[in-house]
Image (cartoon, rainbow, N blue to C red; front, top):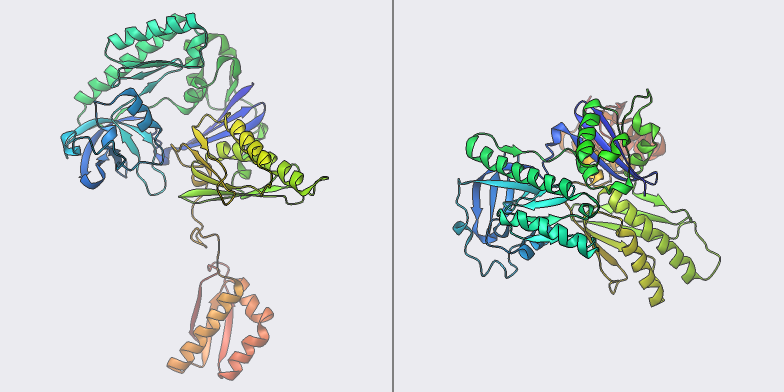
Amino acid sequence: MDRRIIVNSIPGEKRMAILEEGRLVEFSLFRTSDQNCLGNLYRGTVKRIVHGMQSAFVEFGHERTGFIYLRDLRQDISYEEFEKNLNDDEGEEEGNGETAAAAPIPEYVKEGQQIIVQVIKEPIGQKGARLTTHATLTGRFAVLMPTIRHIGVSKKIHDPEVRRDLQDLARKTVEKGYGVIIRTMAGSASRQIVEREIVQLIKKWRTVQDNFKKGKNEELISEAVSPVVEAIKNTYTDDLGDIICDDKDDHDEALKYVSAFIPERKSAVRLYDLPYPIFEYYGIEAEIDKTLGKKLWLKSGGFIYIEQTEALTVVDVNTGKFLGTGSLEQTVFRTNLEAADEIAYQLRLRNIAGIIVVDFIDMRQHNNRMKVIRALESALERDPARNTVYQFTRLGLIQITRKRTSESALATLTESCPYCGGTAHILSRESVGFKIVREILRQNQLYNVRRFRVEAHPDIIFMLEHAFSKEFKEACRAHKVMVDLKSDGTIHREHFTVSEA
C-alpha cells in the first residue's frame, strides 16, 4: 500500500494529510493558538481532590485544568490494569469495583503536590485534558513504560526466532527497571537499531526526571514528537511512500528522523517548491471541504447523513436515487454494504469518536444483516484508532465505539454559528416579521405610539413589503399606526429595532 504524507505549513498553522493509494484517509490540523498537548509530559500541580469521584484536578500550564483518576495515580497496578486504563475511552467513572478495594485518593496524592503527568486525551468540548502518571514514550520500534515492568512483543510478529531475539532484547530493558513493548516494525529492523532506540527512550525518560527535579517553574517538561515524525513513525517501511513538505523546517525534521531510523527511504522525503498550493496540487483541499458536509452521496445513488453532537454521532443510511434491478431486499442490502465502507472511511477521515449510532436501512434477512456487520468491521480494520462494533439492536441500529483522543475535524475546522447558536436553525422570515408586528401593536397599546421606525435585515423588510404586505397594511390600518421600514444588511436576520419615529 502506497501511503503518502503531505504537509502544508504557514505561520500559526500546520496541516497534514495522509493519502493511501491516492485517497485522503486522515487529515490533521495544528494551530499555535490551540495548544496541542497530546503526549506531552508536564509538571502538574494537584489543585483540588474530588473525593466522591476518586479523582483530582491538576494544573499543568494550560488555561483549563486537567483531570486525573485514581487508577492513573496508583503505582501498584499490573500491566493488564494499565492497558485497560489507557484504552478506557468513555467509561471514565471510577465506580467500577476496582476503586472500591483501593485506598482513598489522598493516600496517593495531596493537594499542592507536584507530579509528572502525561496528556492521554486532549481537551474536548467542555472537558479538560485527561492525564496519567503512567507515562509512555513511543518510538518506531518500541514503547517504553517507565512505571510498568512488563515485556510485550507484537502478536503480528510471527517468526518464533525473531520473537525470541526481541524478547531477549526486552529483558535487558526490564532489568534496568522499565517495561517495554516491542512494536511490529521491529520485526523487520536490525537489532542494533531497535536497541539504539530503546536506549534513546530511556535517556529521554531520565532527562524528564532531571528536568522535573530542576525547573520548579516550568510546566512543560518534554514535548511529544512533531505530527510529521509521528506519522512517519507509525507507517510500515514497505508502505511508506513520499513525504512531501512545503516548509523547509518540516522537511529537515522529517529527513533527520528517516535518516536515523529508515535510511533506505531518505529519497522519499521531498521539499515541495512548485508555485501552486500543495494541498490544491494533490486534490486535498476539495476533500477537506467535503468533511464539513452532513449529506454524502454514495456511488449507487444512495446517501448517508451524518449528524454530530458532543455526546454521540448519528449516521442515517438512505437509498436515495438508487432503485436497484432486483428485489427490495437486494436493493437495501447493496445500499447498506456500500454505506458500511463509506461510514468507516468517514469516521477515520473526520476523526469522529466516542459513541456512533448507525441506522442502516431495515433488512429482513438475518444473513444480510450479518454480512453488513462483517463488511463494517472489515472496513474499520484499516482504521488505526481502536474501535468496536456491536450487533444490531431491537430497533435495527448498530452501535460503534471509537477511541477519542482529540477533537473531530468538524470541531477543529468550525465554530458555533453566530446566527443559530449551534442549533442549525434560525427563525423564519415570517416568524421575525410577525414578531415585529406584535411589537408595534404592543407599543401602540401600552404607550399610544402612532408613528414607528423599524430597522431589520433586508429579507425581513422584503417579506413585510411584498410577501405579507396585505396583512401588514391591514394591521397598521386597524390600529391607526404608520410605520417607516428601513433595510440594514448588517443586522442579524433574527434581530430588529422598533422605535418611535
